[in-house]
Image 1 (cartoon, one colour):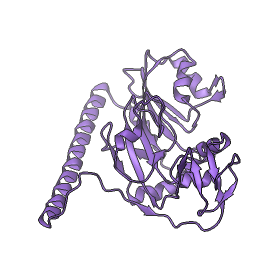
Image 2 (cartoon, helix red, strand yellow):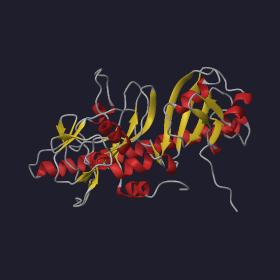
Image 3 (cartoon, one colour):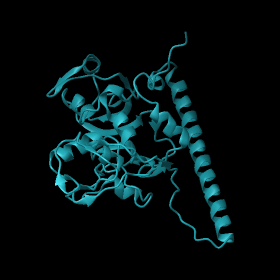
Image 4 (cartoon, one colour):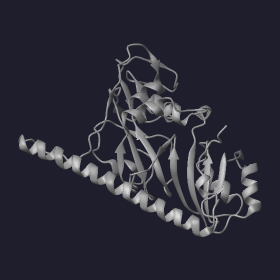
Length: 315
């Protein structure tokens, strides 16, 4: 039986240093060529589309067109936190916390029970704003840069990921899971509460892959400790796969993990005396940042959305 390939197979030296270096150069040239061809194709398609629109006297928009999915509107009761998630405000867990804090009113009365049943026709006020169920589902993949936070609103007026996507959609979308301010990489934004719940629920063991840059080389002893599991203040933590991203530079490490605990990757290395200088998420739930420049975004394809809905434990 053919052995299943790992995300980190490419990090394992199987040839001489010269051969590895040459292979790396070839792969880099190939990726650069594919990237240039991709963007040239997109530019050509955009020019052709704009040319056709101008010939018909239409006003041309430079905003990417999202692929939207119409959700049938429910007619039966649903839990209040599920309603809030479907309204595109936040995920179910965050919605439950908002309800418990007394930030939600149903038909003029404060409700503090997340499981309280509501109808789509009920008057739901969240944080003093009237909410409606989202009809069009939108899925945006962002290559998050550093210094942006993954909240929809910040009282300190710091930059948020919503500032990057701007007016890409009129629907209210929110980040699925979180990346801290100094972490970059793959981030999904959507108003699909059901999918967000699935991708963040611990039981589904959604895989994430990170590229970690440390302040010093990771020793073999600590490498083995991390694989065996380390003890943190909120319990033991382990990774699924650990590999040196570059055998000549052992400050560069690849980590595959399914835990969704807060700042888990940083805390694992910090518990052993390392300072994480850079943390970049390269894969989330099978999604990568290929062909998305840092600080840019794109809409998911129909196939990608279908794949996500079937993504989970063992897939």
